[in-house]
Each structure stands twice: as C-alpha cells, then as structure tokens.
Image (tube, rainbow, N blue to C red; front, side, top):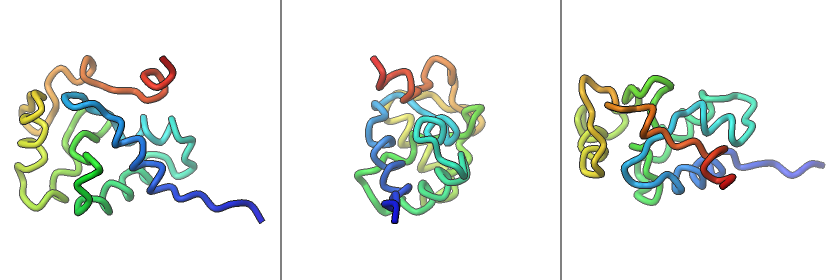
Length: 111
C-alpha cells in the first residue's frame, strides 16, 4: 500500500518558509507541491491553521494579491495588520506591488 501524504503538513512546511515581507498564493504553493486538488487544497489547509502561530497564513493570498482569507483571522483587519507589520502595504484588501512581493517556492527554493 502506498504511503499516504499529509497534504496539510506539506503546505504548512512551505508556508513557514515564506520570508517576512513577502507573500505567495494558494496556486503557487499547490503547483510547487503538485497537489491534485490544487489551490483549493491549499485554501483548506490555510483555513485549518489559524490557531497555529508557527504557520504564517497571513502571507498567503489569492492569485491577484487579494486577502481572500481575511475572514478566518478573527477580525476583518487582522490579516492586513499582520502583513503591514511586516512592511507589506495593503490597499482595498489587495497587496500593493504584489508582483514584486510574490514569493514562488519553485523559483526561490531552487536557488
């Protein structure tokens, strides 16, 4: 019988590597981990980890830089505040300068 993967833990391992002041996307993580359910699987993992301070879930946004998971942080502005505390500017629930702040594990971890 093949070994079962713990997808959520694999996602959390990648999220822990996102540097402060940078963001990544659900899809970027899914692509890096070759997750069959894709970005949705990463979203489920992020929804389940907000009581885990060792997983900086606030650094994961949607494919255009929108704070789509903000309602899981216990208040409407907490995700934005956590990002701003790291120097990430957010306007209208969207990361400013998203393309330059995007951290892609497939690129960054291959260096």
